[in-house]
Length: 261
Image 1 (cartoon, one colour):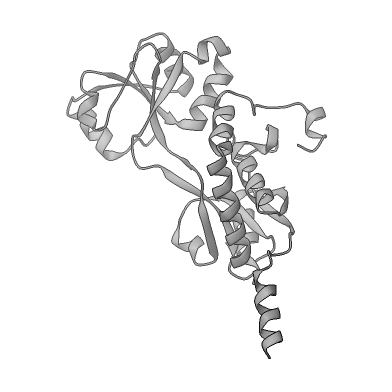
Image 2 (tube, rainbow, N blue to C red):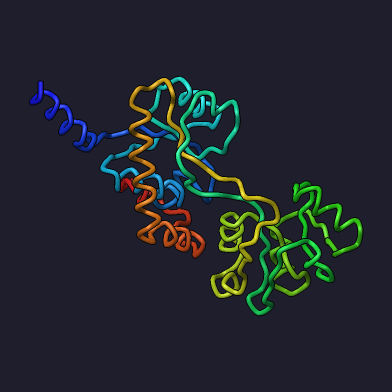
């Protein structure tokens, strides 16, 4: 009995066997795309979090509705990148945050900008893109005349106005904003623009999901979270975000894609 107990203890202390996991996701550049190096910055973070924990992954790309349905039914080992919603939480275990998205203010580096509350925007001219939802509080403050919004029909026009100094700040998603800048301008111009990290409204976190139907999911979740923490603690997580914002994961040729990035 004693020997059996000791054996059980040592077996439980051994690390879980490494696996090759099938992970479903969709196309959401610049975060995730089969047309980006490493399949995008978020895909790289997910892959390396798994690899740090000892697992290999194979990504499969599907339309988003099919992706979440396959994950719910346990037809894949996991799926990303999803925000919290009750209907998803009913079927999945959620990882720690693998990233976040939402609006921040971009500005010229030559015009330093700090803010914490909407009252700090008084006197500024802000670019806005028609049909975008910047939040009721922001729009109400503008209607009260606390600051000026110049509405236009496209993000590109706002970026050009910002670079020309015709507006002071422009709200955009962090990663999408930098990707647009790299698409519109050469590097020497894109590099003149930066962002203030304080969000216009609370950022939304993204997560790796594991189906509750799969008995292996709780242990896989633990391994993934452990690998993700190690990736963040090592500085690689921050490094990869910086690389993405510098345009290093931009579209690659078919020849490179065939190499299996």
